[in-house]
Length: 149
Image 1 (cartoon, rainbow, N blue to C red):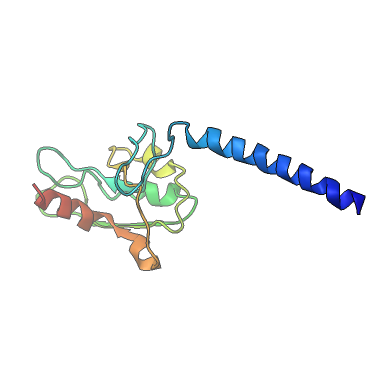
Image 2: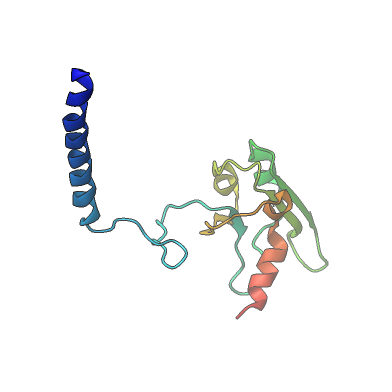
């Protein structure tokens, strides 16, 4: 009986300590960002999914379909195909698929590319419930970017 009577002042003291902590934290400045309305700047070294780079003169992909990136990928998530067109010295890429569900963002494909045709993108908001949304056709994506002003 005596122990339960002593628990009331201890419980009240615990409540006061908790309320003091809550009130001090309540009046401190906010350190979080309301995400959908504001975003933080992306760091320069951020690694998003890979993308093809375009030749500034022609607008075509710099990729020569050498398949070095495909062989260097430890996750086996890159598929490259290309053909040699008439009148051109090098092959042109016709298909460049990335399965981002397997990609570990190791950067082996970016490092091994002899013509700097692959780079990391700054895309960070990749949310979906479907696996098919993470299989990227990078050639089609580059052509779609070229059409946009």
